[in-house]
Image (cartoon, rainbow, N blue to C red; front, side, top):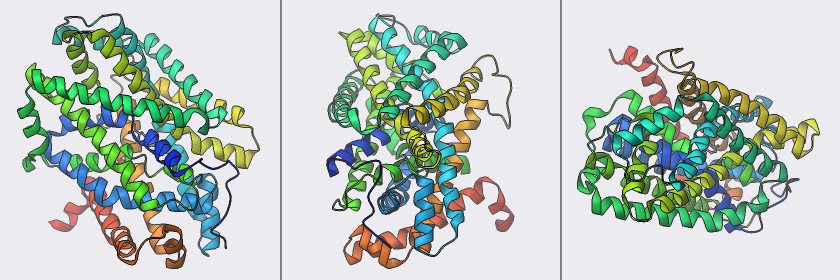
Length: 457
Ligand code: PFF
């Protein structure tokens, strides 16, 4: 058994590089696009509260476990799990956790790239002044016109997928550090400026109330599942993305501190996005339940009204594209490392093949917004099904399995030496993952499938 395996894919130049890369993976469309739209659909504060609880109590400990397994295994998630299971004398079936992660990453990338394509298109729309002095109705109809045109969506989806594939084929480390070092803070500054704008011109107090005063009558099983799924989605947990980044992390870095920093920054960005958007929603008397198009229907109104709004809007969408890009490469990375390790492919071929696969699946997602919008299963379009299966089911399930392996299947000695925590913090981490995580995830799943009602009645 060894705790000092070396990654064949190299190592981060420093702990900071890892923090930047993990933050790059975590901060993305999940924070700025998905968090506000789910909050609006779920009725506000109660969703936000459950989300924050999930990040703190489940997200951070699972992130620590995922980084720890990655750093100990130092290979693609499938091979890491196989190796660790063998070292700990456990069943080789643990490798299927890695398989599920690859599949989830692939499925997420399909619709993620479609939404990233909207963001790309909006760089040009905003920059060209299309939104100048536009009314809320005007902005909404620009969005619905855009989404109902499959050819346009396909063009932008294709461009984004090519961008992702190119970076992954070169190896994620080159370029990622610089992109995150400069562009993340820039996105942060623009978001803060937008919050300032919303404070001055929007219904800020109403938004604060909406986001932070939980109305528990809005709390349904679905809201809790969505909040938990969003915590996994936003932190990039449960599918091996953080595991693979952890596999390039040096042995001297503190996993706990790193996880808290990444989760803290991710949460801050999501809350800022909420604070930028909801004051405007209320000021223009719009519905918070705007669905997946929410930010594309709200932010352009502000860009159309503010001084230098065209430049500001274009800059904002450019930075959001970068944030999406640094996330999408982490979605493809687990499959690519596996193809390189197990199929002997070079990175270019591996990235191209897997990129084409995700691109094809994405075509289904984009057609379900227009030509196929009437084809539904359980009330969901294909886009909705992909989102539900991945964020609500596969990621929490992956997280549960990661937690189970880390604290029930791995020896205490291994996890203690890898984490290097003090005795209190180690005991807390282990307690959370042993009892709280499985009970919480288990209860949410049972409740959603309706099984819990069988016991309660
Ligand atoms: N965390 C990313 C976001 O919030 O946009 C999305 C994501 C990336 C989810 C990587 C899962 C993942 F493995």
